[in-house]
Image (cartoon, rainbow, N blue to C red; front, side, top):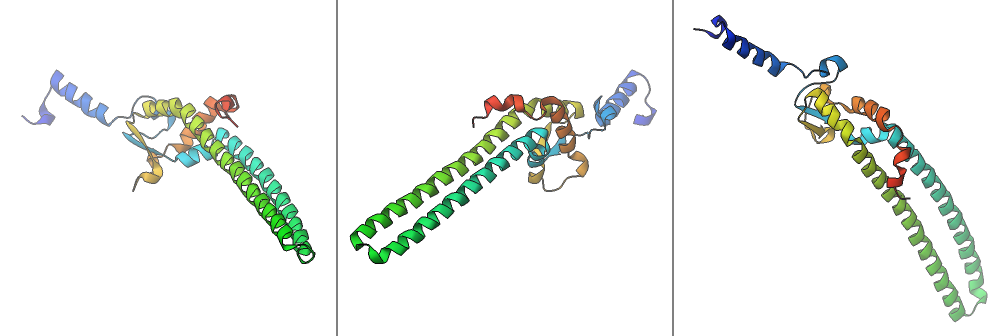
Length: 192
């Protein structure tokens, strides 16, 4: 007897299983979310385009501008000091000049070290903010997985080839913005 000719409870059960296996989970049909076991997401876009990421990046950019202005001011001061030192060279005892030049070199090196430490702190703050962000959005992404019936979300840049329909980045950003907003209340987790 062919499968198409079966009747009764067994055939109905087989038909129901076949239909359910191909059917998207409840909720995914209503929301316009992609369906499937594998979804993709761009972590960089997720952070950069979320309200949280935009706030943090804006704050870090402002701090970077202040640091850059401070650096330019110090460089201008050091340039004037170097020029004055160079002008004194001809009329200064070589031993005294060497002492002054060494002190100036130490001052320049100290400036480099201090400015690099400040720049490294900005980079570290960005990394900390990303870590706090991804910890905070984990439940949102887990809900998206449930809503779509996915078993995994892969980083889009690590996928060789996929349909754009598997990318949930925009959906995730919308849900994250609705859930954590700009993340100001999470600031206690980011030491500055």
